Image (cartoon, rainbow, N blue to C red; front, side, top):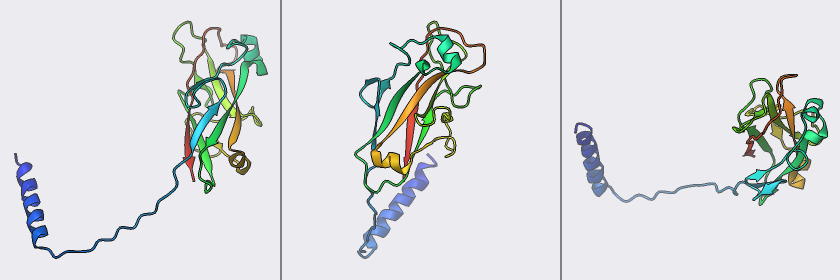
Length: 186
């Protein structure tokens, strides 16, 4: 009850002072900006917002291919810009997910039925497959910062690769991971 009394008093004072005040003109200034971009995923199956991207032939790959770093343990996909203002000058993307404690660029396996162990999936540019982005990093040197050419072409080709998180410890089994791409526009 004590909180209501002071609040009620303030409300009464505000209403009574408004009734006695002269009319005032108020001008608001606002800057309207174009909306941010719509982004889509191209590759795998889905609606472009939530896609399933299988790695390997039919979603299967061998442990030997993963350990050796073979292209058979990877797959390509693209992030695409849709309906973006012409004023877009910079675009940064943070790959988020459950990061591996062993490989900073790896998203760990979330499969619960017969899961593979000591494995993660990494995401990198197709043009730099051995330089994957660090999961959950907002440091520009460790995340995807789109080049002017990528912004102009409205897409960036990426590669997802299954990797061992500790040498010699990976086991076979099911693998599933969720990568979320968060975008910052300028």
